[in-house]
Amino acid sequence: MDPYGPVPRIEWSWTNDRLLTCHAGRLRMFDAEGTAVRDVGAGRYLDARWLDGGGLLAMTSLGLAERFTMHGESYGEPLPVGPLRFTHASLDARAERALLIATHGALSVTLTSVERRTVWQFREYRYNVQSEIGRTTAALSEDGARVAIGTETRAWESGRERIASGRGVLVIAIDDDETVDRFWYECARDEAPLRFAFDAGPRRRLAIAAPEREDGFGTLRLGAGEVYPRTHRGGARAVALDGRGLLAAFAYPTGVGERRLRVDYLVPKTKGPVVVEITDTLWLDPDCEPIALAFDRDSRRIACLAADGGVEVVPVP
Image (cartoon, rainbow, N blue to C red):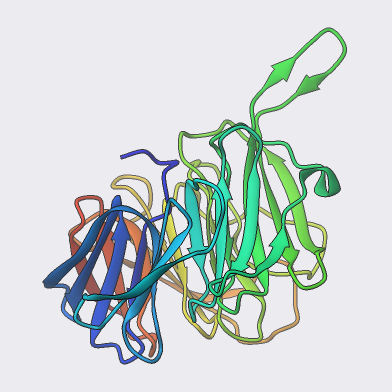
């Protein structure tokens, strides 16, 4: 599996009775216990979300939005959302906005409405962003108002200057086209991208999974300051925040964390330091090594997507 391919998705339905996965171009439905119900489609799917009125919407690499019923049956004509061939996509929670990413040559990030109207276009020159081609990841917030972009720089040196190996994070408020947070840090990079998870409420939190085993960031308050302490165990390959922003889950490969799944219980207060304080941490050990995580709508269960496409559901104590 290409670690820099489309970001895998697992998501609970709005009624918590079904699960949807989008992985390796394939859409599948599962019941609430993690048993496969049906294959919806396979091929070019980059992301998919449940529709709160029933059914689901999926984005393809050709920039087409396709709709399916709760029974996995397609309906209507696909909507041509974007003009390019895309490598990644991220939908908001209501499947109303689509973040489309192309990394063939220059980085192209376009936010559109599913009704074909361009909302925002990322401008590299404005934000002075440089990243290795094919090593950029991005995520759209649940309300479609913010985008997080993860970049990578390789070590390079000439007789006049030196650029260190490292990673950068850029969070942009879309409606104002303004920077909410931005930082870069030096590290010996692993062959895997950053992963992001936004909360769905007013707390404005962002959880970050960094693959390097050196300490990472955990969960941040967006726009809370300019110093970003790295005190959270690194090496996570997937991350999820519950809708309230009070629980954060991080998935680790075997032998990296204390167990395979870490759950942080976060303080509820909105104001505070950049790194959200943790009141307690619980380690769980699902049978699979998750590559994607999702809290259910009541924050009582975590769905884990495995690399082979299987699903495991873990209760939150």
